[in-house]
Amino acid sequence: MNWLSFIALMRDIYGPKLPDLERLQARGLLAVKIGQTFALRIDFLGEDKCRHLAQLYRRTTPIPAEDLETLMNRYCPAGWREHFSSIERRPLAAASVGQVHRAILRDGQEVVVKVIKGDFKERFTADVRRLKQLMRLATWAYPKLQRVADPVGILEHIEEYTLAELDLRNEAGHARVLRELQEQHQHWPMLAPLRFPRIYEELSGEHVLVTEYLHGRTFDELLEQGRLPYEELLKLFLIHGAYMFGLGVFHGDLHPGNIFWQDGRIYFVDTGALSQVSDTFRQGLFAFFEALALEDYVAAACAIHRMSRRALPAARWEAYLRQFMDLYRDFSGKTVSQVSLTRQMMRTIQLAVHSGMEFERGMYPIIKSLMYLDGMVLKCNPDAVLMQDMRPHLATFKRHFEGPAGHLNRGRAQPAVLSS
Image 1: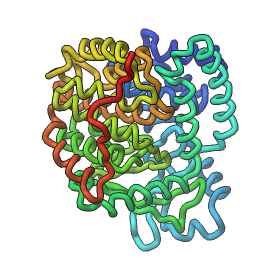
Image 2: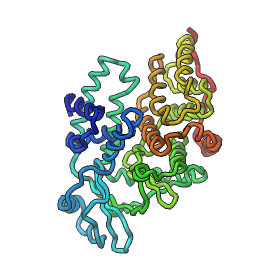
Image 3: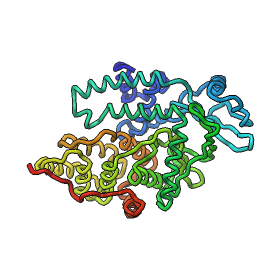
Image 4: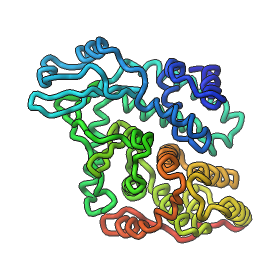
């Protein structure tokens, strides 16, 4: 991907017509990943365009059946097929990297076989390298772009989690990490609804993964059908919050196609990407969202300032606080359709950077999570006042995060403000 094809991609996404998905996929894996990122930006693109781009999660061009056989013969050791009584040729679903096929083991267990669709790595890494060069040039010409939007950091994150997806051993290993953390904190009630499908690691490898077949539906499918209960979506917020705010390790690609709902349980799948957040951001973000839920906007401004590596002089702090209060003047009681949480968060970070704060790299996984979750709420319950709905759960979060097995350290109550 060069700068011309990148500009063409942006014109397709932002243009008046629905993007041509076949043409987008023909531009390569990086273009697909960018398209998937925009699929949740219902606040920027509108519902019709986001619904259209969301097809990239599960309806990308499947491998013809004969190619599936070729790939399994190439990737799987001798005797591997003997463990199965049948493998369906037609895929259940296809995504940007792999596709899954229903199968039955010799003992009658229903499973799915996930296969990497092809050798994407060489072209993908070349595309990322070229686009990084373009973005570095852009940030050299406009330095604040790096601090506000961090385009290079975004590309590095896309590169990291996509390369991780291309090795299915990561999916098995990361699911094990998340499951073990859940078991270690099984007394946390917010983690109780979470499950992980069984992974048959003895039948899996770098290019093939065999997992338990789930009879439920993805959040993506339920959202499309208007059948996802809002209460279940709130459970997902609590689960993700426990991992991100309480444990500092979380599912790095929690889009609605990677979440199953079955028998009242929430299943995490496609755990190839695992993200981590530093203690500074984890603690600061929890304090920020807690303050938003309680409508204490001075405390919210202080929480953002605590995450900065540079304390503001007194005069700048006062100017920042005035602008922050103005930014949140009409935030209270607003539904997610009236005020996008993702857009508000982006504006908050932009204000902080323009005021002179500096933040560590690595914010994109957090912003990406907000994009996914914010987009799901917009589709599920656009009249929800999300911050108010999260308010009753704050005490539970704090009790477990600050307890003997918790990890939350609130730090100083007010930011250190330098004298001018």
